Image 1 (cartoon, rainbow, N blue to C red):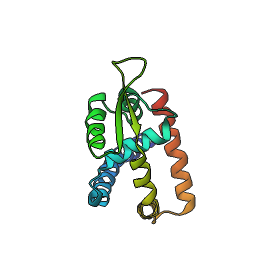
Image 2: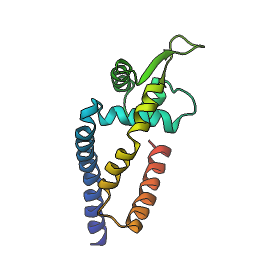
Image 3: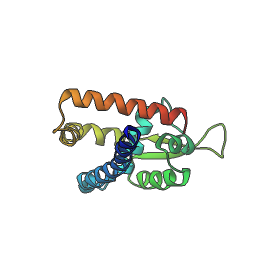
Length: 150
């Protein structure tokens, strides 16, 4: 009986994570719409800035985001048109494309940092600090497991 109850809880968690991600993406897209940026574009820029010490390749960015190289290229092309990043040919291998965030992008995100923090805080306003700490620890474990065994 316990295994069945736990399996049902796990199924709920699994489904809820997908639904939450979709709902948050819609909320993020609405929030960013006035600046003509999507949540996926924001995420790609955040991944490039926060996970890499130097401009990543399309493949590296795709792996970090858990998506295809083709998806990343489409997102990157749109960001490049807006001046948020540059797609550059690797200086050592002409077959490799690297993604470099521009100064315009850094300035854009710095100027809106306070309002972005308010948006993020709003997503979690119903949780206590202890609940956020617990959720953070759980998500770190899940992230670790997914990155160790994709």
